[in-house]
Image 1: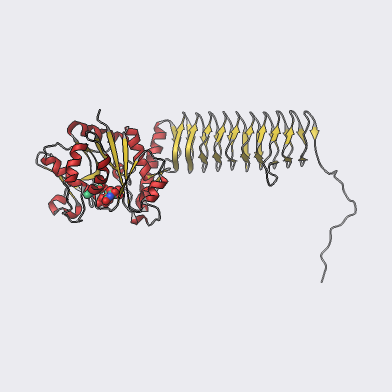
Image 2: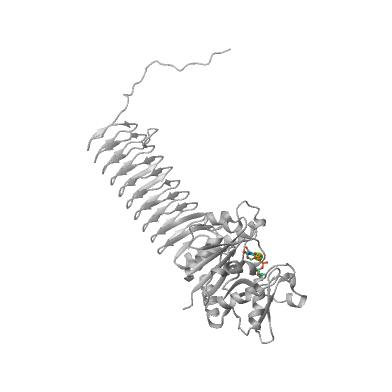
Length: 456
Ligand code: UD1
Ligand code: CA
């Protein structure tokens, strides 16, 4: 097997983005456009990835310095041929070079595999596409037998040549030794005064190399983003693909056009997701799950049979079998709901475990708490976990009942079977199987009358 070397061209300024951030750093889904191309190269099994970045592109290099890539600076942008030339000194002889673009993020790995295979076969593979409106693209010129002869750029083509609707996507693969030879022979004698990578096609054809062409499965694979309108279009294409995949995997989406997945969402069978939900990071859903409208779920695991009612936010949490969340609930990081637990309306939970079958149904804050099973937390209960400097733990045993509007001042423990009277401010241990309450005795004042307004 020939070594596979991927060169990603990312030196473009992207002025039409009207951004202080270089174009290739703008994101589609949860990844920058450049990282999408990088990810595909990795999936293909590239031995080395070279990223050609431009003058002023230091921000790209520093923000993506974690990528396993060789960064090549192209001082001046003298064209796509010039960009590939910048990478050539670090490319070994006898390898296969695949050229990708840092602003064309949606190409499928299967398409690139076919492109690489076609290059292995003949020494040269070119990804082309037929477009209804080919304006702006380089055109593929074939002879009477359909053999690819050259590419002509929009600005250099004559009327006859520009009638062709088969265009150059820019992505190609070729043997490194031959590529080096052709790149060295490029000149900038054309309408844009640039070194066109596309000129190597005519050179290869003249050298008797057969240029194999491959087409993508869908046109979105070849689209780049030059401005934010096109960036938004790419986002829609990506979301459509993710939604389709989910449905094929057995998930019901009430409206596939109204779901956003910025990361990886996996789901078991018979999951139903209502409209306007956003999934971020890694989210794993079991089977038989219902997610209501307008939920945001990030980096979390939901087990089988979970119900999430509308307008809930779940972040870095684990939700056990049959648990119920929402509506309007917020699970903050390190929350664990055990099986059949329930967190209801306007309840916030942080860094806490809610035991099996326990319920926190209304208007509560539970933070830094370990709660046993079959506990009932009354409406408006607050764990006072913060003294202004430190956070403290609340420990609640099994079968506890906390009356409404209670404050548990941490650190504090409520032992198994304890009952806390409504309105209690608890600051010491509540012993097991006992009623604990802190409440002023109620009194009534006979004959008392309300103050009256002075008449003027
Ligand atoms: C190029 C192709 C054209 C093809 C089109 C597909 C050439 C001469 N033309 O045209 O046939 O139809 O892409 O979109 O190759 N870049 C650098 N350094 C440079 C110049 C460009 O890194 O000096 C990068 C850009 O950042 C961009 C890519 O190369 O990612 C393409 O450059 P661009 O100027 O957009 O090429 P086009 O004129 O669109
Ligand atoms: Ca372009």
